[in-house]
Image (cartoon, rainbow, N blue to C red; front, side):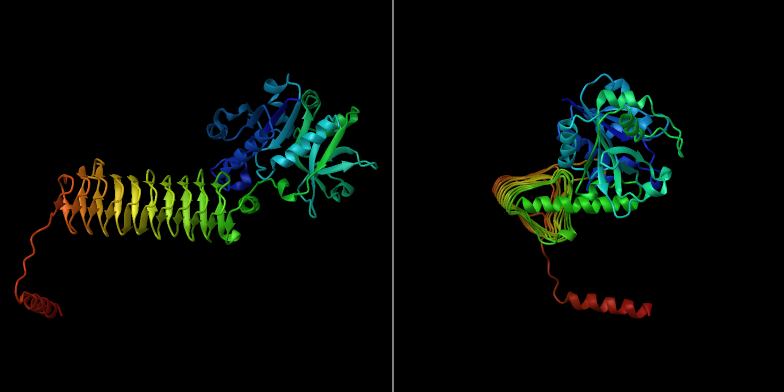
Length: 464
């Protein structure tokens, strides 16, 4: 049967107290609605309709063409929200999942189990439920003496007996698509909130003799809906634990899971070791046999196998295999390091390629540069790439040697095998295998140090 999805993302989220629309708040680096859409697509949903209202443009901008959209101009309840998808899905035949855009912890495995139960029983509706010790605030799943589902009652409409029920509605459902939209036409707003509840569809279908099932999840965390910053933090914690566990089961050593933060889209190869206080964000990809951390923050970066990164920040960079970075290095966007490269302490690299076996060991800046293979860049060397208006390129060819405290005034080219003497400020190209010296000739004045000290002492005495 065709699988469809309606994702509810129209609520304002006032309890978040945020300028950012609720379902766009990230959990482990990805907006909540992105997690939900990816999960339904993982189980083979062919069409996904996101119901938007407040913040509609922002949600559509983020999700783009990966979903279809229906507008709920007035927030009149969950039943009213789902009904806005009727023009898009009303004529379809199949199974429709209805899920909230603020439930990022629901897994594809759970949704697959829900759908399989629904389809195997030939049900008109199947509810994803959970049992909570404290179900306050959640709608209760009411069953008859035989265990069959009768209805769902919202917290504010519960009788004392219904309020004591611990099985709750998670807000995720499967429906026969045609029966869903037919029942929605019969939903009224005669309740405490004067809203059109999607939960009333369950009672309507039961009253018409349709079969209603419930699928009880064994992971209560999947039922968490995020309505405020506290719940957002709880969801972040659960997902972070889930992500770290997945990587460990795939062969990654995580020394201290409680202090390791891995984004939901990060890829890590086996036998890589993550030391404490490591942060991996965005589309970061790490190969096998790497050592990352401690104290590494890496975003949207590719790190090839065998590399080492510690006490450093990397953003939109690429690190070749068997290359070492840090401690205390900063790779900015466009930094691309070859194999067996060494980037040492307090080195910054930006928009520059550095060839295999080259070294920038300490206290240097390499920006807007093309560095060849087997190049040595000494301590304190700088590519002077900016004149206040324009960025210019520095080229350093294979086997060149750049001495300590050298300034290379771009645009400039240092030839293959060339040698630039320490302390030089170089403004013109250096041909292959030439030696460049660009500093005044040293002059020693006999006994002049005593005169300098005497002057300094006299000045200090006058000021006192």
